[in-house]
Length: 80
Image (cartoon, rainbow, N blue to C red; front, side):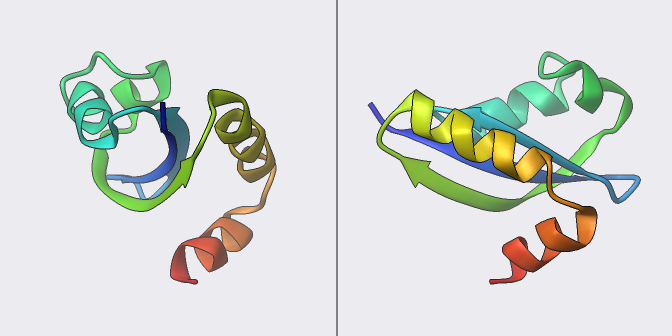
């Protein structure tokens, strides 16, 4: 089963990174307040980045790496 890493842009212009099997469904969960604790107080606006992985483990490793990048590095990744 495929997993996706995604990055959301929020109303206050922060970035949220997560993984999911169905990014659109997960985005709707974030919008409805049933997503992550962070996105309850930082409302998501749009999906700005997705990347597909063959396993959950691979997606989690990339999520960990991205969460440790600076905002500038994340923006550079998104723009590529």
